[in-house]
Length: 260
Image 1 (cartoon, rainbow, N blue to C red):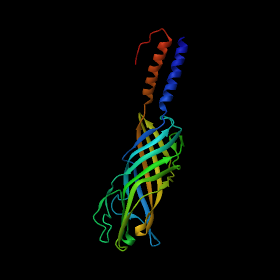
Image 2: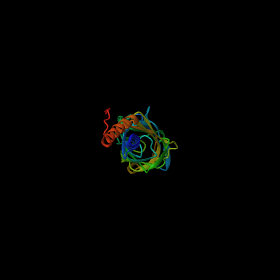
Image 3: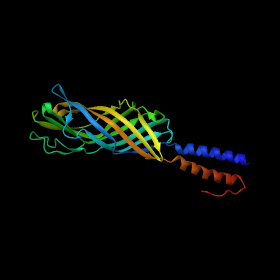
Image 4: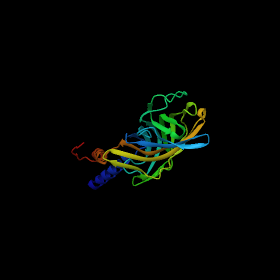
């Protein structure tokens, strides 16, 4: 009888720990170390010009929000699928234009990114930038996973541009999506009860400002780092032991001292 009970306890612990490690959806919170650098170009009158920075860190900002992922096993995943994300760009500083009239570009004001195109005496900025991230299930091997199946889509955003030689400025909404083309691998790790998700990203999205006759491309490069709280293995084992004790009490007339 004792051997049967011990066997039952072992099976229960094993199944309890394995079952507790699984999860359907997990929400990870983006850390302020998540940051994307902007590069890109503007095409005007058939000529293409690369962005330069308006000022220190005007082409770099952090992102806050969350990433929701479907993970088959929280402690040792073999697959992960990104369901959705809320990625909101932080204010990196005060940039122009704020005045789109011919008299502009006005005083600097809050924006996510600030760009210059000196060859045509133009300034531009991105405001209210937000993205969603989604991807089909991908294999996780020893914590590493490919990011090539991910797509990032604007959920909100505006671009303002102003050039004195071209007679003023215009604004347009940012729309569209881009595939993650980063050559780096993503990473999932667990330390204690904290799971950390690192997603390297490089993606490009085209834009058009019809009122100004401007087209171009915005490219974002960086890392998204997010964390979530998960059960510690020791905690799950203790819960499993408590459950096993309750089961063996029902199957035996012996009295077990309670540790739960």
